[in-house]
Structure formats: structure tokens, C-alpha cells
Length: 296
Image (tube, rainbow, N blue to C red; front, side, top):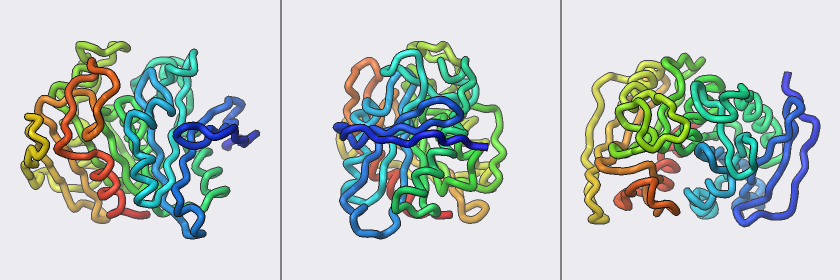
């Protein structure tokens, strides 16, 4: 049983309105960004965007800028906050990672399920077009939601975040989009403990993650492969692997960025130690194009 005790909103934030909801006796928060199209009365798609470990909703909004895409494309963006001992450093319990949320066994799946109930009740949203995307630990959270709440998400996308479990058994297929650099020093492409990992988590590899979701979605094991031109001239060869169609036309799509770091393609990272980024592809454009192809 989900428990929603309170629902309140504070003054406007730079990236939307900061709102609060009480779930199971714990106050949770998120940033809500409504596009101009919200005034039209039409039901709009919803994208939940999850921050990485040690950050928060506001920094994620600035990092990825997906609300800028939303303003043009006409979808609602929600940046949820994880939990942590301090407000500016939060994490998600995404399986075997990460930090405070994992060690305290915070029920983040319950939080998101309850949040979705509230958002669908109070906003003009299309329940058939609900999506999740995330960076690093946030991408891992998107994978966990695809596995545990597959009936609620039409598709998910992860940037630099492998799945946080050995296997996945969603009740129904969930299309998956994944971006990962081969020089990621935090969540290594090949798995294991990254040289710059703060939590010293032994991550599952990207290949493991993709293989598990190819199996779960009933996709063919051999992908269609496309080389993406280096239009930005930044020296990062990109390969697109598409597995599908599978059950109910689900797909798994992987962008392998040779030499890429722990970064969001198309967005210059605020911190150099996250590694290099490609500008030959724009993750925001590609993930939205991907999401638009799927609905529940």
C-alpha cells in the first residue's frame, strides 16, 4: 500500500517548480517542468529524469538540459531527488548501488510508483506515454524501474549507467536505449570498479546489460550495426547497435562512443574529470526520437 500524506509546492526553481510528496512517512522532492503546451488541455507525455550519484535534481537539470528539449517538443519533465545525508549529494537504490540509498535500503521504486500516481492524477498526462531516463546511478534507476514497473513505462534510456542486477524479468517488454563511452572512468564499459569510482562499486558491464535486455525483450541476438559520422570532428567514433524488433516490437539500442567519458552526449560537462564528450550526437534529440516510437 502506497502512502501519500502530503503534496505541496514551493516557489519556482530555475529549472521548474520544486515540489514535495510524502511517501511512507518520508518526505521526497522533485523538480517539475511544464512546457507551454500544458495549457492546451491535451494529454502530454511524461519523462522522469534521474540524477547520478552524489548530485541532485537541480544539478541534473543543468547537466542534461532535457527541459529545454521538452519546451520545444511538448512533454512534461520531472527531475526526482534521491536521498542522502546532505541535500546536494543524493543517490538511488538501483539494485547493488548506490551509496546512502542502497545502504539504507530506501524503497525508491515505491517512491516513483506513488509519484506517478500523483502526477497522473493532478496533471494532463498520457499514461500510455511515460518514460524514464537517467545518468550513471540514475540510468541504473531507469533500468530498475523498467524491470520492476514495466507496466508503467513505455521505454527507458540510460546514459553511462549499467543495470544494477545480474538478471531482469520484466512483466512485459520495455524498449531500452543506452549510451556509453569506452573510456568511462566511473562506470567502466567492461564492468568492474572504475578508477575514479567513489563508492568502489563493481559494476556490471555494458555488454552484460544489453544482453540481459535483449533476452528480456525477445530481441534477436545479432544487431544491426551503423557507424555514425563524426560530424563534430571531435575524434570519437560512434557505433549504433540496434537489436530488434522483439516481442511487441520492443528494441534495445546501444550507442558505443569510442574514447567517450562519463558524460551526456551533446552536453559539455561542468567538470573536466568526468571525461571527454562527443558532440556528433545529441542524446536529448535521440532519446526523445526513441521515446516517441513507443507507447503502452
